[in-house]
Length: 88
Image (cartoon, rainbow, N blue to C red; front, side):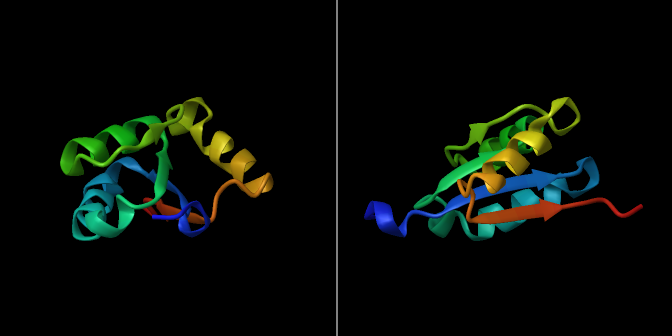
């Protein structure tokens, strides 16, 4: 895939939503594998273990991973954010 078609995708999932995020990534693994992925630490490990996708793992959300993603958004380094939050 050419560099201009590469999409930078960030993923964040709260604990009760990690399984749902993994299921989404399993379903779209073929598409996601063609793009640059990053995630908060535990979410990235969870998804990588479930799918085999290569994911840049940032800090855990509580240790600043969400802030790292926000910073990348501010510098236009992220194109899409998948954020599954626990509303309970």
